[in-house]
Length: 427
RNA sequence: GGAGAGGUGCUGGAGUGGCCGAACAGGCAUGACUGGAAAUCAUGUGUAUCCUUACGGAUACCGAGGGUUCGAAUCCCUCCCUCUCCGCCA
Image 1 (cartoon, rainbow, N blue to C red):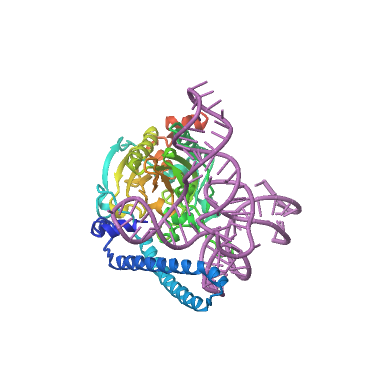
Image 2 (image 1 turned 90 degrees about the vertical axis):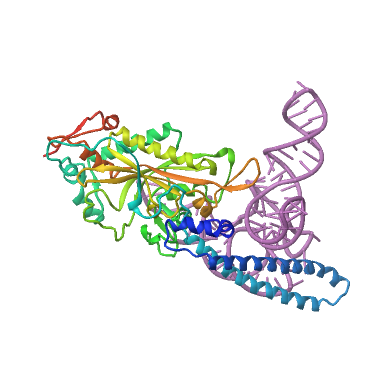
Protein backbone atom coordinates (compact mmCIF):
# COMPACT_ATOMS: atom_id res chain seq x y z
CA UNK A 1 0.00 0.00 0.00
CA UNK A 2 1.27 3.45 -0.85
CA UNK A 3 1.37 6.38 1.55
CA UNK A 4 -1.50 8.76 0.85
CA UNK A 5 0.61 11.64 2.13
CA UNK A 6 3.12 11.02 -0.63
CA UNK A 7 0.36 11.09 -3.23
CA UNK A 8 -1.14 14.24 -1.77
CA UNK A 9 2.20 16.02 -1.71
CA UNK A 10 3.56 14.96 -5.09
CA UNK A 11 0.78 13.44 -7.18
CA UNK A 12 2.53 14.06 -10.50
CA UNK A 13 5.72 12.40 -9.38
CA UNK A 14 3.92 9.31 -8.11
CA UNK A 15 1.81 9.10 -11.25
CA UNK A 16 4.87 9.37 -13.46
CA UNK A 17 6.64 6.59 -11.57
CA UNK A 18 3.60 4.31 -11.66
CA UNK A 19 3.21 4.84 -15.41
CA UNK A 20 6.14 2.48 -15.80
CA UNK A 21 3.90 -0.38 -14.76
CA UNK A 22 0.33 0.85 -15.28
CA UNK A 23 -1.62 2.02 -18.29
CA UNK A 24 -2.97 5.17 -16.80
CA UNK A 25 -3.45 6.59 -13.42
CA UNK A 26 -5.63 9.42 -12.23
CA UNK A 27 -5.58 10.74 -8.68
CA UNK A 28 -8.35 13.31 -9.13
CA UNK A 29 -11.00 11.31 -7.30
CA UNK A 30 -8.61 10.12 -4.65
CA UNK A 31 -7.47 13.64 -3.81
CA UNK A 32 -11.05 14.86 -3.66
CA UNK A 33 -11.99 12.06 -1.25
CA UNK A 34 -8.91 12.84 0.79
CA UNK A 35 -9.86 16.51 1.11
CA UNK A 36 -13.42 15.57 2.02
CA UNK A 37 -12.18 13.09 4.56
CA UNK A 38 -10.03 15.63 6.33
CA UNK A 39 -12.77 18.24 6.38
CA UNK A 40 -15.13 15.72 7.95
CA UNK A 41 -12.61 14.63 10.51
CA UNK A 42 -12.12 18.23 11.59
CA UNK A 43 -15.86 18.83 11.88
CA UNK A 44 -16.55 15.61 13.75
CA UNK A 45 -13.71 16.40 16.13
CA UNK A 46 -15.16 19.79 16.94
CA UNK A 47 -18.65 18.45 17.43
CA UNK A 48 -17.40 15.72 19.71
CA UNK A 49 -15.41 18.22 21.69
CA UNK A 50 -18.57 20.25 22.20
CA UNK A 51 -20.59 17.20 23.16
CA UNK A 52 -17.97 16.06 25.64
CA UNK A 53 -17.72 19.50 27.19
CA UNK A 54 -21.46 20.09 27.53
CA UNK A 55 -22.29 16.56 28.63
CA UNK A 56 -19.68 16.66 31.34
CA UNK A 57 -21.46 19.56 32.98
CA UNK A 58 -24.87 17.94 33.01
CA UNK A 59 -24.62 16.12 36.34
CA UNK A 60 -23.60 19.31 38.17
CA UNK A 61 -26.35 21.34 36.57
CA UNK A 62 -28.87 18.66 37.36
CA UNK A 63 -27.78 18.73 40.96
CA UNK A 64 -28.18 22.51 41.00
CA UNK A 65 -31.76 22.01 40.00
CA UNK A 66 -31.41 23.33 36.47
CA UNK A 67 -33.72 22.13 33.76
CA UNK A 68 -31.44 20.16 31.51
CA UNK A 69 -34.03 19.05 28.98
CA UNK A 70 -33.14 21.78 26.46
CA UNK A 71 -29.45 20.90 26.66
CA UNK A 72 -30.25 17.24 26.17
CA UNK A 73 -32.33 18.11 23.16
CA UNK A 74 -29.50 20.14 21.70
CA UNK A 75 -26.97 17.41 22.31
CA UNK A 76 -29.24 14.87 20.77
CA UNK A 77 -29.11 16.93 17.59
CA UNK A 78 -25.34 17.19 17.82
CA UNK A 79 -25.06 13.44 18.21
CA UNK A 80 -27.28 12.91 15.21
CA UNK A 81 -25.09 15.19 13.15
CA UNK A 82 -21.97 13.38 14.31
CA UNK A 83 -23.50 10.10 13.29
CA UNK A 84 -24.36 11.34 9.83
CA UNK A 85 -20.86 12.64 9.32
CA UNK A 86 -19.32 9.44 10.63
CA UNK A 87 -21.33 7.35 8.22
CA UNK A 88 -20.18 9.50 5.31
CA UNK A 89 -16.65 9.48 6.61
CA UNK A 90 -16.60 5.70 6.79
CA UNK A 91 -17.76 5.50 3.19
CA UNK A 92 -15.10 7.98 2.06
CA UNK A 93 -12.41 6.12 3.92
CA UNK A 94 -13.55 2.85 2.43
CA UNK A 95 -13.15 4.31 -1.05
CA UNK A 96 -9.74 5.73 -0.28
CA UNK A 97 -8.59 2.44 1.14
CA UNK A 98 -9.91 0.45 -1.82
CA UNK A 99 -8.15 2.79 -4.21
CA UNK A 100 -4.85 2.66 -2.35
CA UNK A 101 -4.97 -1.10 -1.89
CA UNK A 102 -5.36 -1.49 -5.62
CA UNK A 103 -2.22 0.49 -6.45
CA UNK A 104 1.04 -1.34 -7.06
CA UNK A 105 4.30 -0.27 -5.47
CA UNK A 106 6.39 2.49 -6.99
CA UNK A 107 9.18 0.91 -9.03
CA UNK A 108 12.76 1.91 -8.28
CA UNK A 109 14.37 4.52 -10.54
CA UNK A 110 16.65 2.03 -12.26
CA UNK A 111 13.85 -0.42 -13.05
CA UNK A 112 13.21 -0.40 -16.81
CA UNK A 113 9.67 0.52 -17.84
CA UNK A 114 7.41 -1.86 -19.72
CA UNK A 115 7.07 -5.64 -19.78
CA UNK A 116 9.22 -8.78 -19.87
CA UNK A 117 10.83 -7.83 -23.16
CA UNK A 118 12.61 -5.02 -21.33
CA UNK A 119 14.09 -7.24 -18.64
CA UNK A 120 17.76 -6.46 -18.42
CA UNK A 121 20.36 -9.21 -18.11
CA UNK A 122 22.82 -8.05 -15.45
CA UNK A 123 25.30 -10.90 -15.52
CA UNK A 124 25.75 -14.41 -16.79
CA UNK A 125 27.62 -17.22 -15.07
CA UNK A 126 29.10 -20.33 -16.68
CA UNK A 127 28.61 -21.69 -20.17
CA UNK A 128 25.84 -23.53 -21.93
CA UNK A 129 26.84 -27.19 -21.98
CA UNK A 130 27.61 -28.38 -25.50
CA UNK A 131 27.32 -32.17 -25.42
CA UNK A 132 28.72 -34.16 -28.36
CA UNK A 133 26.00 -36.76 -27.94
CA UNK A 134 22.25 -36.69 -28.30
CA UNK A 135 21.08 -35.04 -25.11
CA UNK A 136 17.83 -36.07 -23.47
CA UNK A 137 15.34 -33.70 -21.94
CA UNK A 138 14.71 -33.73 -18.23
CA UNK A 139 11.39 -35.52 -18.48
CA UNK A 140 13.05 -38.54 -20.07
CA UNK A 141 16.06 -38.28 -17.79
CA UNK A 142 14.19 -38.18 -14.48
CA UNK A 143 11.97 -41.00 -15.71
CA UNK A 144 14.84 -43.20 -16.92
CA UNK A 145 16.78 -42.50 -13.74
CA UNK A 146 13.61 -43.19 -11.73
CA UNK A 147 13.77 -39.88 -9.85
CA UNK A 148 10.27 -38.66 -10.61
CA UNK A 149 7.05 -40.54 -11.24
CA UNK A 150 4.77 -38.31 -13.23
CA UNK A 151 1.99 -40.79 -13.89
CA UNK A 152 1.50 -41.79 -10.32
CA UNK A 153 1.78 -38.18 -9.23
CA UNK A 154 -1.11 -37.35 -11.53
CA UNK A 155 -3.02 -40.39 -10.31
CA UNK A 156 -2.85 -39.00 -6.79
CA UNK A 157 -3.14 -35.25 -7.23
CA UNK A 158 -4.32 -34.73 -10.78
CA UNK A 159 -2.67 -32.86 -13.57
CA UNK A 160 0.16 -30.60 -12.51
CA UNK A 161 1.44 -32.91 -9.79
CA UNK A 162 4.37 -35.30 -9.70
CA UNK A 163 6.03 -37.34 -7.04
CA UNK A 164 9.66 -37.82 -6.09
CA UNK A 165 10.90 -41.35 -5.61
CA UNK A 166 14.10 -43.02 -4.46
CA UNK A 167 17.18 -41.04 -5.42
CA UNK A 168 14.88 -38.33 -6.75
CA UNK A 169 13.40 -37.75 -3.33
CA UNK A 170 16.86 -37.93 -1.86
CA UNK A 171 18.23 -35.44 -4.37
CA UNK A 172 15.40 -33.06 -3.61
CA UNK A 173 16.07 -33.39 0.10
CA UNK A 174 19.79 -32.97 -0.48
CA UNK A 175 19.21 -29.68 -2.24
CA UNK A 176 17.01 -28.44 0.56
CA UNK A 177 19.52 -29.46 3.21
CA UNK A 178 22.38 -27.87 1.32
CA UNK A 179 20.46 -24.60 1.14
CA UNK A 180 19.41 -24.79 4.77
CA UNK A 181 22.99 -25.29 5.96
CA UNK A 182 24.15 -22.42 3.83
CA UNK A 183 21.57 -19.99 5.25
CA UNK A 184 22.23 -21.03 8.82
CA UNK A 185 25.92 -20.36 8.20
CA UNK A 186 25.05 -16.88 7.02
CA UNK A 187 23.17 -16.10 10.21
CA UNK A 188 19.61 -16.51 9.00
CA UNK A 189 17.10 -18.02 11.40
CA UNK A 190 15.25 -21.16 10.35
CA UNK A 191 11.44 -21.03 10.41
CA UNK A 192 8.91 -23.74 9.65
CA UNK A 193 5.63 -21.85 9.44
CA UNK A 194 2.06 -23.11 9.08
CA UNK A 195 1.14 -23.96 5.50
CA UNK A 196 -2.43 -22.82 5.99
CA UNK A 197 -2.77 -19.09 6.46
CA UNK A 198 -5.57 -16.68 7.26
CA UNK A 199 -6.85 -13.72 5.31
CA UNK A 200 -4.78 -11.10 7.12
CA UNK A 201 -1.61 -12.88 5.98
CA UNK A 202 -2.67 -12.76 2.38
CA UNK A 203 -3.50 -9.11 2.67
CA UNK A 204 -0.19 -8.06 4.17
CA UNK A 205 1.76 -9.97 1.54
CA UNK A 206 -0.19 -8.25 -1.20
CA UNK A 207 -1.87 -11.47 -2.37
CA UNK A 208 -5.30 -10.30 -1.34
CA UNK A 209 -7.67 -9.03 -2.43
CA UNK A 210 -6.44 -8.70 -6.01
CA UNK A 211 -4.69 -12.01 -6.53
CA UNK A 212 -6.82 -14.20 -4.29
CA UNK A 213 -7.63 -16.51 -7.20
CA UNK A 214 -4.01 -17.57 -7.58
CA UNK A 215 -4.07 -19.58 -4.37
CA UNK A 216 -5.85 -22.71 -3.18
CA UNK A 217 -8.62 -21.84 -0.76
CA UNK A 218 -9.81 -24.26 1.88
CA UNK A 219 -13.47 -25.06 2.16
CA UNK A 220 -14.14 -25.22 5.87
CA UNK A 221 -17.83 -24.53 6.04
CA UNK A 222 -17.98 -21.00 7.40
CA UNK A 223 -16.87 -17.95 5.50
CA UNK A 224 -13.53 -17.88 7.22
CA UNK A 225 -10.75 -17.44 4.67
CA UNK A 226 -7.99 -20.02 4.85
CA UNK A 227 -5.59 -20.78 2.07
CA UNK A 228 -2.52 -22.83 1.27
CA UNK A 229 0.49 -20.57 1.07
CA UNK A 230 1.77 -19.95 -2.47
CA UNK A 231 5.22 -19.19 -1.03
CA UNK A 232 6.56 -19.05 2.51
CA UNK A 233 7.11 -15.33 1.96
CA UNK A 234 3.39 -14.99 2.66
CA UNK A 235 3.96 -16.50 6.07
CA UNK A 236 7.25 -14.77 6.88
CA UNK A 237 6.03 -11.23 6.19
CA UNK A 238 3.41 -11.87 8.85
CA UNK A 239 5.90 -12.85 11.52
CA UNK A 240 5.89 -9.28 12.85
CA UNK A 241 2.46 -8.21 11.64
CA UNK A 242 0.97 -5.55 13.96
CA UNK A 243 4.19 -5.26 15.91
CA UNK A 244 6.55 -2.41 16.68
CA UNK A 245 10.21 -3.44 16.74
CA UNK A 246 13.16 -1.65 18.26
CA UNK A 247 15.64 -0.17 15.85
CA UNK A 248 18.35 -2.28 17.47
CA UNK A 249 16.41 -5.42 16.52
CA UNK A 250 16.92 -4.74 12.83
CA UNK A 251 17.77 -6.28 10.50
CA UNK A 252 15.90 -9.52 11.11
CA UNK A 253 16.91 -12.32 8.78
CA UNK A 254 14.84 -15.47 8.40
CA UNK A 255 14.49 -18.34 6.02
CA UNK A 256 11.77 -20.92 5.75
CA UNK A 257 11.14 -24.16 3.99
CA UNK A 258 7.66 -24.98 2.79
CA UNK A 259 6.10 -26.46 -0.27
CA UNK A 260 4.44 -23.78 -2.38
CA UNK A 261 0.91 -24.38 -3.55
CA UNK A 262 -0.32 -22.54 -6.62
CA UNK A 263 -3.38 -22.89 -8.75
CA UNK A 264 -1.64 -21.69 -11.91
CA UNK A 265 -5.12 -21.32 -13.33
CA UNK A 266 -5.07 -20.48 -16.99
CA UNK A 267 -1.31 -20.71 -17.27
CA UNK A 268 -1.05 -24.28 -18.54
CA UNK A 269 1.62 -24.20 -21.18
CA UNK A 270 2.15 -27.33 -23.17
CA UNK A 271 5.83 -26.74 -23.67
CA UNK A 272 6.35 -26.54 -19.93
CA UNK A 273 6.31 -30.26 -19.48
CA UNK A 274 7.64 -32.02 -16.48
CA UNK A 275 8.51 -30.06 -13.41
CA UNK A 276 8.79 -26.57 -14.77
CA UNK A 277 5.35 -25.52 -13.59
CA UNK A 278 3.26 -27.43 -11.10
CA UNK A 279 0.69 -26.90 -8.39
CA UNK A 280 3.15 -27.82 -5.67
CA UNK A 281 6.87 -27.32 -5.47
CA UNK A 282 9.47 -27.02 -2.75
CA UNK A 283 11.19 -23.79 -1.97
CA UNK A 284 13.46 -22.28 0.61
CA UNK A 285 12.67 -18.64 1.06
CA UNK A 286 14.86 -15.97 2.62
CA UNK A 287 13.30 -12.94 4.22
CA UNK A 288 14.58 -9.73 5.78
CA UNK A 289 13.05 -6.93 7.81
CA UNK A 290 15.35 -3.92 7.57
CA UNK A 291 15.58 -0.21 8.23
CA UNK A 292 14.65 1.78 5.11
CA UNK A 293 18.22 2.91 4.53
CA UNK A 294 19.51 -0.67 4.50
CA UNK A 295 17.00 -2.19 2.12
CA UNK A 296 18.99 -1.72 -1.08
CA UNK A 297 22.09 -3.36 0.34
CA UNK A 298 19.94 -6.15 1.72
CA UNK A 299 18.57 -6.85 -1.75
CA UNK A 300 22.10 -7.18 -3.12
CA UNK A 301 22.97 -9.48 -0.24
CA UNK A 302 19.97 -11.69 -0.96
CA UNK A 303 20.52 -11.98 -4.70
CA UNK A 304 24.22 -12.62 -4.02
CA UNK A 305 23.36 -15.45 -1.65
CA UNK A 306 21.01 -17.06 -4.14
CA UNK A 307 23.61 -16.80 -6.92
CA UNK A 308 26.21 -18.41 -4.73
CA UNK A 309 23.97 -21.44 -4.32
CA UNK A 310 23.43 -21.91 -8.05
CA UNK A 311 27.14 -21.44 -8.63
CA UNK A 312 28.00 -24.02 -6.00
CA UNK A 313 25.85 -26.44 -7.97
CA UNK A 314 27.84 -25.51 -11.08
CA UNK A 315 24.77 -24.64 -13.14
CA UNK A 316 24.87 -22.16 -15.98
CA UNK A 317 22.55 -19.24 -15.25
CA UNK A 318 22.06 -15.53 -15.57
CA UNK A 319 20.71 -12.71 -13.42
CA UNK A 320 18.14 -10.28 -14.75
CA UNK A 321 16.62 -7.12 -13.44
CA UNK A 322 12.92 -7.28 -14.19
CA UNK A 323 11.13 -4.54 -16.07
CA UNK A 324 8.37 -2.75 -14.22
CA UNK A 325 5.42 -4.75 -15.53
CA UNK A 326 7.14 -8.04 -14.84
CA UNK A 327 7.75 -7.13 -11.20
CA UNK A 328 4.96 -8.25 -8.92
CA UNK A 329 2.73 -5.49 -7.63
CA UNK A 330 4.13 -5.32 -4.09
CA UNK A 331 7.72 -4.84 -5.15
CA UNK A 332 10.02 -1.91 -5.78
CA UNK A 333 12.63 -3.94 -7.60
CA UNK A 334 13.17 -7.58 -8.47
CA UNK A 335 16.12 -9.61 -9.68
CA UNK A 336 15.55 -13.05 -11.11
CA UNK A 337 18.07 -15.83 -11.32
CA UNK A 338 17.32 -17.82 -14.42
CA UNK A 339 18.80 -21.20 -14.98
CA UNK A 340 19.53 -22.72 -18.36
CA UNK A 341 17.27 -25.58 -19.38
CA UNK A 342 18.97 -26.98 -22.51
CA UNK A 343 15.99 -28.94 -23.85
CA UNK A 344 13.84 -25.83 -23.78
CA UNK A 345 16.54 -23.54 -25.07
CA UNK A 346 15.44 -21.13 -22.39
CA UNK A 347 16.44 -19.66 -19.09
CA UNK A 348 13.90 -20.40 -16.35
CA UNK A 349 13.48 -18.61 -13.06
CA UNK A 350 14.79 -20.43 -10.00
CA UNK A 351 15.01 -17.48 -7.70
CA UNK A 352 13.39 -14.14 -7.42
CA UNK A 353 14.84 -11.54 -5.07
CA UNK A 354 12.71 -8.52 -4.33
CA UNK A 355 12.62 -5.37 -2.29
CA UNK A 356 9.09 -4.46 -1.21
CA UNK A 357 10.10 -1.19 0.42
CA UNK A 358 7.44 -0.29 2.99
CA UNK A 359 4.57 -1.57 0.84
CA UNK A 360 4.03 -4.83 2.70
CA UNK A 361 4.98 -3.32 6.06
CA UNK A 362 2.27 -0.70 5.64
CA UNK A 363 -0.31 -3.36 4.81
CA UNK A 364 0.78 -5.46 7.77
CA UNK A 365 1.49 -2.49 10.08
CA UNK A 366 5.04 -3.57 10.84
CA UNK A 367 7.01 -0.71 12.34
CA UNK A 368 10.13 0.02 14.31
CA UNK A 369 10.89 2.76 16.79
CA UNK A 370 13.70 4.97 15.49
CA UNK A 371 16.05 5.48 18.44
CA UNK A 372 17.11 8.96 17.47
CA UNK A 373 13.66 10.47 17.00
CA UNK A 374 11.53 8.14 19.09
CA UNK A 375 9.15 7.97 16.15
CA UNK A 376 7.69 4.86 14.62
CA UNK A 377 8.52 4.12 11.01
CA UNK A 378 7.58 1.30 8.70
CA UNK A 379 10.24 -1.33 8.22
CA UNK A 380 11.25 -2.41 4.76
CA UNK A 381 10.80 -6.01 3.75
CA UNK A 382 12.72 -8.14 1.29
CA UNK A 383 12.50 -11.68 0.12
CA UNK A 384 14.40 -14.04 -2.12
CA UNK A 385 14.06 -17.66 -3.02
CA UNK A 386 17.05 -19.59 -1.96
CA UNK A 387 16.10 -21.64 -3.91
CA UNK A 388 13.08 -23.22 -5.58
CA UNK A 389 13.99 -26.81 -6.32
CA UNK A 390 11.45 -27.88 -8.93
CA UNK A 391 13.48 -26.24 -11.67
CA UNK A 392 16.85 -27.11 -10.20
CA UNK A 393 16.48 -30.84 -10.70
CA UNK A 394 15.63 -30.42 -14.40
CA UNK A 395 18.65 -28.14 -14.76
CA UNK A 396 20.90 -30.57 -12.91
CA UNK A 397 19.89 -33.64 -14.91
CA UNK A 398 20.05 -31.83 -18.22
CA UNK A 399 23.21 -29.85 -17.61
CA UNK A 400 25.06 -32.71 -15.89
CA UNK A 401 24.02 -35.62 -18.08
CA UNK A 402 26.58 -37.96 -19.61
CA UNK A 403 26.56 -39.83 -22.93
CA UNK A 404 25.59 -43.11 -21.25
CA UNK A 405 22.42 -41.57 -19.83
CA UNK A 406 23.82 -41.16 -16.34
CA UNK A 407 23.92 -37.89 -14.44
CA UNK A 408 26.85 -36.64 -12.40
CA UNK A 409 25.72 -35.34 -9.02
CA UNK A 410 27.09 -31.87 -8.18
CA UNK A 411 29.95 -32.16 -5.70
CA UNK A 412 28.28 -30.10 -2.97
CA UNK A 413 25.28 -32.43 -2.85
CA UNK A 414 27.20 -35.68 -2.49
CA UNK A 415 27.56 -35.49 1.29
CA UNK A 416 23.77 -35.27 1.45
CA UNK A 417 23.41 -38.25 -0.90
CA UNK A 418 25.40 -40.74 1.13
CA UNK A 419 28.49 -40.04 -0.97
CA UNK A 420 26.83 -41.07 -4.20
CA UNK A 421 28.46 -39.43 -7.24
CA UNK A 422 26.46 -40.59 -10.22
CA UNK A 423 22.82 -41.37 -10.87
CA UNK A 424 22.46 -44.35 -13.19
CA UNK A 425 19.51 -45.21 -15.44
CA UNK A 426 17.49 -48.07 -13.98
CA UNK A 427 16.71 -49.82 -17.26
C1' G B 1 -17.12 -32.84 18.60
C1' G B 2 -19.15 -31.60 24.10
C1' A B 3 -18.78 -28.13 28.44
C1' G B 4 -16.88 -23.83 30.67
C1' A B 5 -13.79 -19.26 31.34
C1' G B 6 -11.93 -14.97 29.35
C1' G B 7 -10.22 -10.86 25.87
C1' U B 8 -8.20 -3.63 29.31
C1' G B 9 -1.77 0.04 28.15
C1' C B 10 5.21 -3.00 27.66
C1' U B 11 3.45 -6.95 31.55
C1' G B 12 0.24 -8.49 35.58
C1' G B 13 -4.26 -6.69 37.04
C1' A B 14 -8.51 -3.20 39.00
C1' G B 15 -12.56 -0.96 37.08
C1' U B 16 -20.63 -2.37 35.98
C1' G B 17 -23.02 4.71 33.16
C1' G B 18 -20.17 10.99 33.99
C1' C B 19 -14.65 12.52 38.67
C1' C B 20 -11.48 6.56 33.49
C1' G B 21 -6.82 7.05 28.47
C1' A B 22 -7.89 4.28 32.56
C1' A B 23 -6.39 2.61 39.98
C1' C B 24 -2.51 -0.39 41.90
C1' A B 25 1.85 -3.29 41.11
C1' G B 26 5.84 -4.65 37.97
C1' G B 27 8.97 -3.33 33.78
C1' C B 28 11.54 0.47 31.19
C1' A B 29 13.74 5.65 30.75
C1' U B 30 15.69 10.08 32.96
C1' G B 31 17.22 12.61 37.36
C1' A B 32 18.65 12.67 42.73
C1' C B 33 21.42 9.87 46.36
C1' U B 34 26.39 6.63 45.91
C1' G B 35 33.40 5.99 44.96
C1' G B 36 30.36 2.55 41.88
C1' A B 37 26.18 -0.54 42.23
C1' A B 38 21.90 -2.27 44.91
C1' A B 39 18.10 -0.19 47.67
C1' U B 40 15.35 4.34 48.05
C1' C B 41 13.02 8.85 46.26
C1' A B 42 11.22 12.06 42.14
C1' U B 43 9.59 12.55 37.26
C1' G B 44 8.28 10.35 32.90
C1' U B 45 6.74 6.17 29.93
C1' G B 46 0.86 3.68 24.28
C1' U B 47 -1.10 4.16 19.22
C1' A B 48 -3.50 6.75 15.34
C1' U B 49 -5.71 10.80 12.96
C1' C B 50 -6.67 16.02 12.29
C1' C B 51 -5.20 21.32 13.14
C1' U B 52 -0.44 24.25 13.93
C1' U B 53 5.93 27.00 10.88
C1' A B 54 6.73 25.73 15.85
C1' C B 55 5.37 25.42 21.04
C1' G B 56 1.15 22.99 21.46
C1' G B 57 -3.97 21.58 20.90
C1' A B 58 -8.30 18.45 19.60
C1' U B 59 -10.44 13.76 18.69
C1' A B 60 -10.50 8.54 18.70
C1' C B 61 -8.83 3.82 20.48
C1' C B 62 -10.19 -0.91 26.93
C1' G B 63 -10.90 -7.92 20.86
C1' A B 64 -14.14 -6.13 16.16
C1' G B 65 -18.72 -4.06 14.43
C1' G B 66 -23.55 -2.19 15.54
C1' G B 67 -27.32 -0.32 19.28
C1' U B 68 -29.31 2.36 23.81
C1' U B 69 -28.02 7.31 26.19
C1' C B 70 -27.08 14.26 26.88
C1' G B 71 -22.85 10.94 28.10
C1' A B 72 -20.38 3.90 27.30
C1' A B 73 -14.25 0.21 28.99
C1' U B 74 -18.85 -0.18 31.91
C1' C B 75 -25.75 -1.71 29.58
C1' C B 76 -27.87 -4.55 24.94
C1' C B 77 -27.02 -7.31 20.12
C1' U B 78 -23.85 -9.73 16.44
C1' C B 79 -19.18 -11.55 15.19
C1' C B 80 -13.93 -12.85 15.97
C1' C B 81 -10.12 -14.76 18.93
C1' U B 82 -7.65 -17.15 23.14
C1' C B 83 -7.45 -20.45 27.22
C1' U B 84 -9.12 -24.74 30.41
C1' C B 85 -11.54 -29.55 31.02
C1' C B 86 -13.71 -33.96 28.54
C1' G B 87 -13.81 -36.84 23.95
C1' C B 88 -11.03 -38.19 19.47
C1' C B 89 -6.26 -38.44 17.32
C1' A B 90 -0.40 -38.20 14.64
